[in-house]
Length: 137
Image (cartoon, rainbow, N blue to C red; front, side):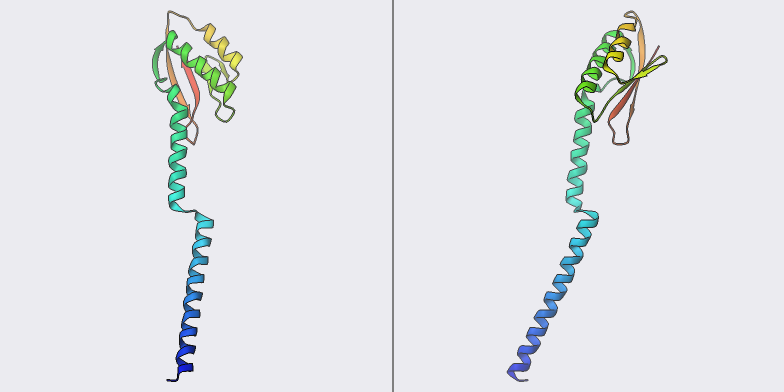
């Protein structure tokens, strides 16, 4: 083989290697654009999970039979949440009334009998955030 032939082979080979690398890189870019980086998705999922946990912590323990003393505290937390958090409003249901309005929740709070215990249950939205408190006698 002559020097020029060897050089042509090396140049062609290098160009083919670059083309293969380019095609592979372009494929990876398309994949990440379509599906995202799995590590990024995992971090995003973990962060969303932390957000859900941080939101739900003040309302933990709301299920089960509770005295009016504890229910009043939960309702105060819900009123505060609904005034500050427009993304995650919590609805309160008591008897035939269902509301997320802070003034109406305060009215429900005042209507509870101090000597009774009530059954509480919570509902969650698809993302896992508490979105409803049901109070039954």
